[in-house]
Amino acid sequence: MKIIQVKTILTSPNQNYLFVKILTDSGIYGVGDASLNGREQTVADLIDTYLAPLLIGRDPEQIEDFWQFVYRGSYWRGGNIMMSALCGIDMALWDILGKSAGKPLYVLLGGKVRDKVLCYSHVLGKTQEEKIARAAEYVRVRGLKVIRLRAGLPAANGTFKVNGHQNGPKVEPWTPEDEIYNTIEYFIRIREAVGRDVGIIYDLHERFSPDQAVRIMRKLEEYDPFFIEDPVAPDCVDSLRYVREKTAVPIAFGELYKSRWECLPAITGRWVDFIRCDIIRIGGITEAKKVAALAETYDIKTAWHGPNDVSPITHAVNWHLNVSEYNFGIQEDGTTDSLIHQVVTGGPLYRDGYLTMEARPGIGCDVDEEMAARYPFHKAYLPVCRQEDGSLHSW
Ligand code: CS2
Ligand code: MG
Image 1 (cartoon, helix red, strand yellow):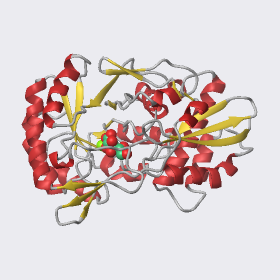
Image 2 (cartoon, protein in one colour; image 1 turned 180 degrees about the vertical axis):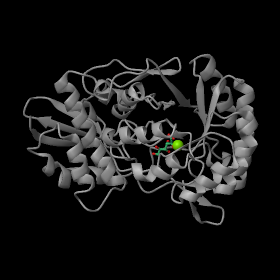
Image 3 (cartoon, protein in one colour; image 1 turned 60 degrees about the vertical axis):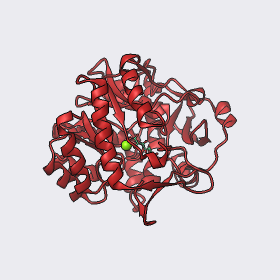
């Protein structure tokens, strides 16, 4: 089998996505997700200009070799653009392998070790009051066992939108003292609303300094968070260690990591309880199985990033990893946006607190190119945060 064509597909059903389709001379093709919110066009250009020509004529079954060839062979290693591009290709190659073997991806990864994939959903709503009411409803009506929250300053009008703006980033205010207070108050009210048996996750979105994160987490200890997500920025590894040493709250970390080497101190130091890389950002399935194996070695569970700005293809890959990994912890469920399901078919669906998926050979998804063309891509920016004095802060 030989690769004969590599296509990139940009589309925007409510949200921008980038897909990779790799065609072979056998008639089998594979699809992958290379979406990088706010930088989709750049990733597509990298694939079209540099990587696609390297794939033509290659054996699609040499997945590991191509990964190493791109990662090490280009001398300039990694980064978000390169790893997202590599992921789109990596997923498409695994998809081809599964289809040609007639086996679902999870079988290629070692087979099922569980029947159910526990997931958590983000509680949406404009105001805190609305979110508190919704949280209780999610549990009662939708059967969620674990929910996730993020306060969002009232001044920011509840916005934490990921499908950004076309003419430049929207500026959101950031007042840490208000946010610390809000987070603590909001968490306690949610705990009262849903009771003791529901898991509550809180996303701090890498926005706090280590001492601010510790202040929040210590106050929340007695309210039993399932975990606190991304308390500090990943740039300085000592920040995470500082937080870990000062609080007993479980920590999940890693949606901004770009490789297994970036995860390494957090794993070997046991500074996290859950590793939650975004598998697009670390270069796909080939790298995710290595991160999972490293984490297993240190008794750390996985909680792969799964927002709605990655497509159902990635949600499906997450599901295949989840059912075949020994050290699976929980899965973020971002599968609810409906328009994308017109473009990508076959992804997992939410049911009663779990993600379920009908297994088919390969990843099990397909991209409808005609549908994708009906939702033309347009450049969009993620928001930025500025503090009261005008200075920029991590979003
Ligand atoms: C978030 C994401 O799902 C999450 O945990 O942190 O929504 C993140 O903000 C987006 O993926 C950014 O595009
Ligand atoms: Mg997050």
